[in-house]
Image (cartoon, rainbow, N blue to C red; front, top):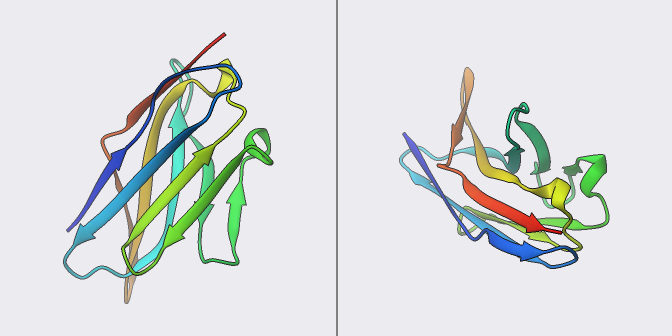
Length: 119
């Protein structure tokens, strides 16, 4: 079982910055990727930024150049630095951890953290 705990988030004005953090823990950890997803009211959950490795990251077009994902492999943590925030970034942000086993993958989710950007 993998536990995922997020921290950070909050209320910020347009143009401001926030930093989200996520810690994965548990037995039999074999993490393939750690990433951030978000879900705005009445919208589907979408991928924001995923770190497959230090050289392999993926960003949604809407956040490229503004958000930076960083992963600490030794500590099983991932951070999301969010700059130049705008109201369209308002959502609940979830950390997703993909843990692999010899014959399967499972994704584990945190409880979510609210990010609200005021105009």
